[in-house]
Amino acid sequence: MLAVSKDYRKRKIGSTLVLMAIEAMKSAGADEIVLETEYTNQSAIALYQQMGFIKDKRLYRYYLNGVDAFRLKLLCKPELPALNPSLVHA
Image 1 (cartoon, rainbow, N blue to C red):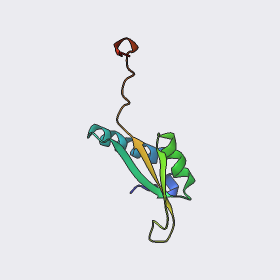
Image 2: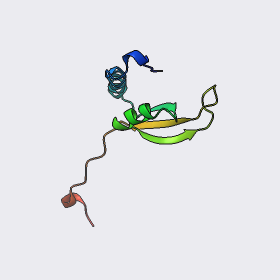
Image 3: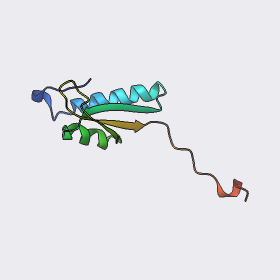
Image 4: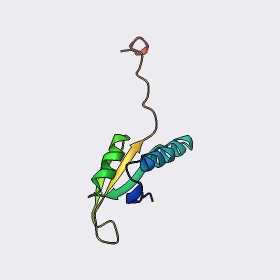
């Protein structure tokens, strides 16, 4: 779980911690990174989307207080290189 106190927001603390976690997971060989955040937390959703996360699913009444969440995913494995057309036989 990650939260930054209101007194310390807008100082890149959250984004720095998220980037450090992403790099650690990538270094450990993660294929994808999955997280959840309250569907009303537009600041967090915007931050994660800027980092490449995509909304995967809305989770109804996910939290104990009954609030919905979005599951977001970041794909970590590099895309396959494009095939060299001269190597492809018809």
